Amino acid sequence: MNGQMRIGIFGGSFDPPHNGHLRVAIAAADELSLDKLFFVPALAPPHAISKTLTPPDIRMKMLRELSRRDERFYIDDYELRRRGPTYTYETIKRFRKRFPRAEVFFVLGSDSLADIPRWKKGAQLPDMCRFAVALRPQSGVAALIDKAVKLKVRPPAVSSTAIRRAAPFTGGFLSGKVPAAVARIILDNYLYVDEAVAAYLKKRLDNAKYRHTLGVAATAVALAAKHGADPRRARLAALIHDMGRVMPSAKYPSYLAPAPRPAGMPSAETAAANPFLLHSFVSARLAQKIFGIKDRVVLNAAAHHTLGCPSKSSTVYDDIIYVADAVAPDRRFQGVARLRREAFGDLSRAVFLCALMKLGYVLKKEKYLAPEGVAVYNSRLKKIKK
Ligand SMILES: [Fe+2]
Ligand SMILES: [Fe+2]
Image (tube, rainbow, N blue to C red; front, side, top):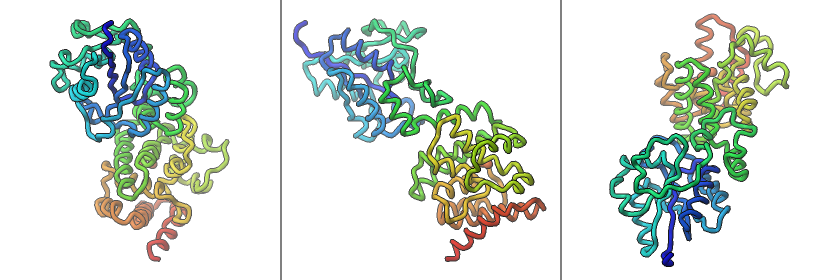
């Protein structure tokens, strides 16, 4: 070796960073005799613009846990700080400027290598640096890797996508796939639960109900942004709000019976007259059991979306999910446009109007009028008349 510095760049979303990344990083540093290996988390990969990534600060936290493993590892957060997507060729150019005399390697998995021709200035990249590739089993990109350094390491069969979609999410699924500290960050922040929930529902709900759920989620996120709530919590509550509909309503009473009665649950009389009203409480229970969601605010918001929550005990999330469910894009009833406008203006008034419309509908259909719904209406009336 002629003493020339050797630098590795390992780019990716790292959402989450996992043991496969770690194996490849260690192998690259060893096999290429790197002095420094930089993880370069992307704000959003330009070729996957539509994907919603975990917020940068949480991804950085996870990556710091990973990079702690080896003193040759560094993190370059330029792309995250710059707050705009960066093309790989810009990243490589930046590193060449920073280390003008170094040999620069770009480390990647063979599945990313297959994408290079679609990257901006992709054809020029092999002249700017050397590629070092870790071949995943069964990758079919042999023709593209002629010029690349092939790492001997065989990365374990773990991918960020598989981790994000795994359901049920709790239990031992993460062990062995990500370092324990990363697993803790994932579970503490409910990362990827929404993706796992969506995958679970897609399998079990009919298309119209599944699309309704996604519509409520999108509406809840928009309402959260408008009314100063956390869009991630609102989205999670919306995604679980109709989970109870994966089972027939005849099963609701027996499913809910063994555990203590949750606050706000309709009386036995109401439930007997209209068992469907229990579905939102089943949703909260299922979300807790299957996905380990413990956030009471999120669970309550889902549980209260049918009958509403009296103003004394409600949170902004209760109001958002209650209204989002009523004004989701698939809803078509007289007055929905007005309710939608109100939802993005005065949320309390929207909740009141929604309770009013629900009662009006029940009366018109000559159905059982749940006293719990009337109580919500009265408390909301009092609130807006104050
Ligand atoms: Fe519902
Ligand atoms: Fe719904």
